[in-house]
Length: 308
Image 1: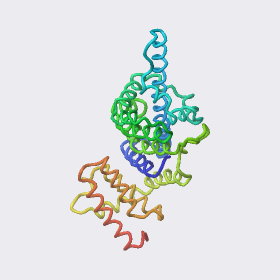
Image 2 (image 1 turned 180 degrees about the horizontal axis):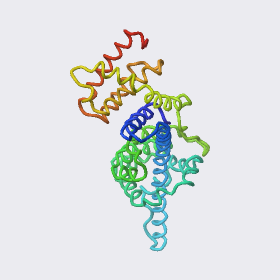
Image 3 (image 1 turned 60 degrees about the vertical axis):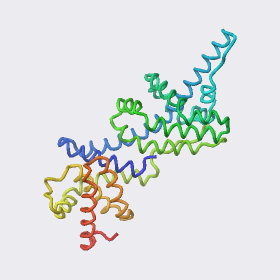
Image 4 (image 1 turned 30 degrees about the vertical axis):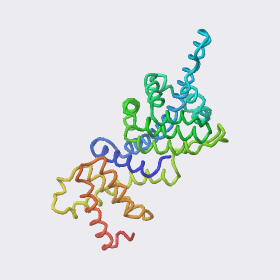
């Protein structure tokens, strides 16, 4: 699940923090990198579990409605509650062994019943869910499709959930946009015949990605003098000392990636870090970084330092 997009984001954050805290050692910073990446994987399971808790909330409402109906000899459970409580994909998630193992070690949602209620209400009040109920279809495919739509429209864009995540981990709000894509990918992997043994996505896409994270961070620190010299020597119409610290860090990591990972095209590297600059730096930074990295890249090629 932890892919290179997320790794680059984490390395930018942790390298920046490393330079902001002069007393921090490289070993301590590397441990923080590993910790923050594992927290992203925990967020992935946490968000999957929100769907389980919403289903359970709907089930409790069904049970309550049926109990009241027995006492009053009238009425019954709301169709929205029934359809969510009996949704096949949500039941599969609840039965999933890997997710059940996660719930045994966590009690996160027990502390946030109001949030689950709020998410449930947003689910059932959404136009997408109302249209789904009106359609009357209850195949596995339709039940999976509506949960994917609701996750994308309700959970992925929920500000109240953002506030809760920030309390749990300082890393999680920055991780949301990447982790949400992996939750969606996981939901789409479930089929009508899926068993409780269905694995979730692994923590890393591959062992090479795990190595990429450590090597990129470590080499960025070790090659700081070299990469910063390239930045300083190629600044155009701007003093190096006036560059934003975040811009320097982003370019430093990008140059390290170009030098250490010859299999990654330079254009891919530059594009990835421009995306991060758009989020973490000034409005003018992406254009400046793009021009400067392109100039440095040409200089490296002319010097024979970079062959790609």
